[in-house]
Amino acid sequence: MSAWRPLVEFSIRHPRLVLALALVLTVGFAAQLPKMRADTDPKNMLPITSPVRQYNDQVEGWFGLHADVIVLGIRRDDGIFAPDPDPHPPDHGRHLEAPRGGRQGRHRLCHPG
Image 1 (tube, rainbow, N blue to C red):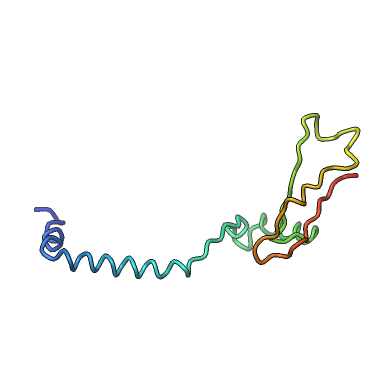
Image 2: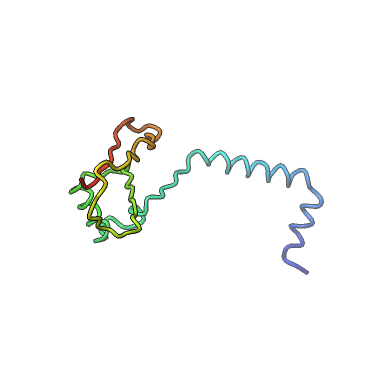
């Protein structure tokens, strides 16, 4: 005799009760979804005492970085250092939009030259 047999027999004898119980559990768990918070910042996956995280905080302090910073890198096929850098690089910052709840117009394009 299987260990699951009594549960299966109960489910067959009382299908409405089993479905009602499943519905109550589903609604109960679904009600908790708005309370969930996903933190995808890899820095928060390290303990505060981690040397890597402490150094990262120090570097952020040096450069005044915060969570809203987006870094854009442009790769050149002819190498990193160009003898004749473009004096008027395209304004890639104009395509950026402020995140929801963010500050509009606080982006800038930094380039050598």
